[in-house]
Image 1 (cartoon, rainbow, N blue to C red):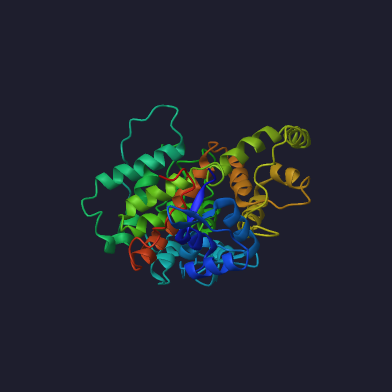
Image 2 (cartoon, rainbow, N blue to C red):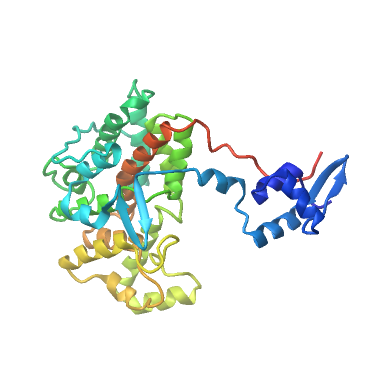
Length: 373
């Protein structure tokens, strides 16, 4: 038997009232079938009508209610609380931008606390992202006040510091800024903290990206800040989100010796070239443009040779992060670690907004399409 929907389920999928569903029946747009004296509607027919009417359904109705004062994505530009993000990345410290996103208070010289190195018995196969994820969980266990949601800013500062300190050293630490501390854990090359500071700011938030949605859903249940960040990390590790920069890194590593041949072989295999295009931007990713402009002052970029072959699209921040990591001899997943540490700022900012909203507002009803009892 064809999967059927009740009147209420059809109404939710079509984004209308139940009375409107019956109006659709009277006009011949839907067919009502009586099952146990209840009106039922075929899933395929409802879906076809939803496509014709542009219905967005129940899930869209919930996401439409997410009002935010944090990031603005418009006309291929990105702003944090009304300020240009590329400009912030050139003029401000990561700590001060974080404080601005959390509190709307402008600051200069904001310092994060000294982090505590969290001991982790992890196998050699553990990636930097694995270490970030475990450090978040262990930092939570060690904080008896983690359920005090009013301490979210204090918690976030300590958490970022702890996560950075928990990554293994590959260079000599210099300075107390997060970018200076983190550089010593990512690259053996002479420190370029200004570059890393810019990358962290560029990645601190990106409106309602999928990991931020996951974080806000957790926050709507009043999960503590560590749990919120863990929820964001779970989504971020997806191949189509944070992990995309590691995929782009491996592609650029291969392309170093033969850019054109690598592109040709990739296309021959039917795979898209990693690090290009974006679901939100139409012609340019402003974060990638800015980071590439900074990187070009430090040598020739293999990414530029790849970009020259892709005239129908544009590079995104995944490719820029991959090039950053490759240029300074970082680990393949260093871009993911930078992404995760930076985005903790945005996840906490969105959690603080969500804590002020009615709890559990993302609870939607499923549209059951299986066999009916």
